[in-house]
Image 1 (cartoon, rainbow, N blue to C red):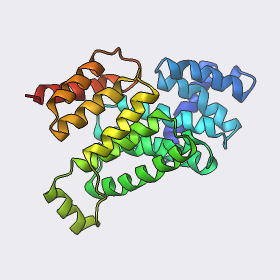
Image 2 (image 1 turned 180 degrees about the vertical axis):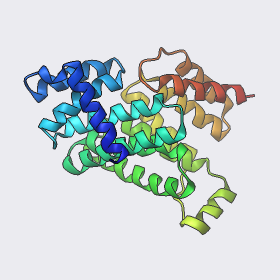
Image 3 (image 1 turned 90 degrees about the vertical axis):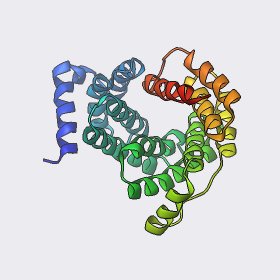
Length: 254
């Protein structure tokens, strides 16, 4: 049995033992899963989402939710191989959601978020391919919903990473994998400011804006935005990890 199939089977077994299947409908199962999703308890959420998906295998909202839980589990994993395994599971559900929901902004954005989570653990060739997929997905999401702050954040990260690639690495990448897209810190800053304008209460927007200013050499603005983000309470699954990046960026400022 393939790892993905085994993981899904185990999730269903846990769901059966937890009593999730006693719910009458897929909607009820999804509501129970949502309770654990909000509580950042991904495995418990999957115990309800996976059986619901068995009832409605083409449900775009369920596929998006399941992909998110595997990304959360990816954050919890400590080993690179396990992170990538969970990332591939998330990617599978994300891609299926995007294929089934061409007019659903969250479905189109889901692969971009998943690719972004996987990039730090992949090889250079996969990173180049993943970067192209991120841009493609986030562009579709923003065309459908220009007011999606997460999409603007993802696009900001895309510009930020590309702007930070040095000349030597870019030249080597072009020779081996083909030309890499070019971007600037200014483009990243515009995206993060847009995300903040849409939702100023997410610390990740402020910290990534600060990190971009740091990358651009604007120490004063970098410190201001980093400190603002660091002072905000943890709410989302990745907030502690984002704050660690912010802490590292602050320590490097002079």
